[in-house]
Image (cartoon, rainbow, N blue to C red):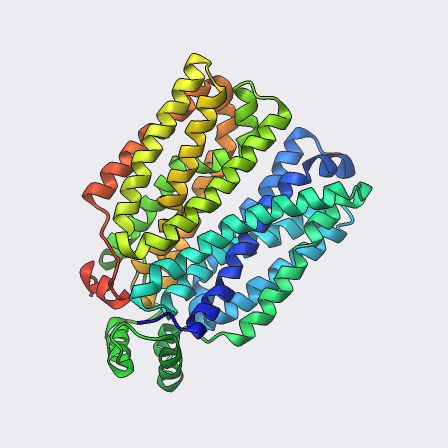
Length: 444
């Protein structure tokens, strides 16, 4: 079965939510000095300003599930595009600290919502053969968005626009936000959401254009309807109950392990980590760029093989890479060797993340929940991810100040736990339709 153009186009549009997610997350890194000066921020209020978007992200991820079920995945993509635009323009034109905080919070809502809706939508329109690679486009665009934010900040800074520099850095995101909003008009509704609403003819049309697992549209429709089984279940039934316990535990486990690796500590504090090991400021920034490009390169590598090797094999390789690289980083800090050893260990760490957890997490979350509760399941996984991200990001500076080597040793130990979990508990979802995965997990 060939990858058809309509499916690829729809996937690329939905994954733009991930690009804006990455851009919005990273853009603030180039604005902190200007924000301190413009709004007279103390270290505490600066930290709270940076965290305001993360608070919105947690709330956005928690709350987006029910609207996505009620209004549809495509409607939520429209709303997310609008929120990104409002946040970009609002931050650019903010007339005070509190208005700026509110607009950053709105941007966080969009990021949290995108982390749920974009991969879920792509999973629901994609045949099993292509689903891993297509959902992984979201992660690729997140990484690409981070790099674009760094490049945009650098380009604007090189123009020396003065006190308005931070406003331009935020405002430029309005352009891709508008493009995302307009392009959503040209993609279809999720066929699984349509069938949950009894709109069979519309669902059939989408499946005919996007492709099916069996090659038979009517057979696919019957399989989806059987998985929904709305005669015995409702879309509003309780989510936290025994029959959904297995996917709930899988979602919580993979998202917690994702952050217990320390990945967000590296992404947010890379220059600081290198400076802790004795690098100069400019050298630290250059080494951070190397980390960023490594992340992108290995994300692309993982996308090419995820539907061949499977999710578990990538997680095993990534877990082993985590353990080796984090142990080497801990040794580097313990012995004070720093320099080349630390850079090499962190490059291996980010490569291991991009090839393993980074590529797998959003794919796996979008696959393991039944059609009738997928939005709420994805919201649970994403919100757990963001709560853990906040915990790691806020605690890293304090723990690292006390003992750099013990911080990385702790992350390495957590990754040993991840490897054990993958080997003993994590199911393989490669090559199975969403409905087959439901049966594999023994969900009625």
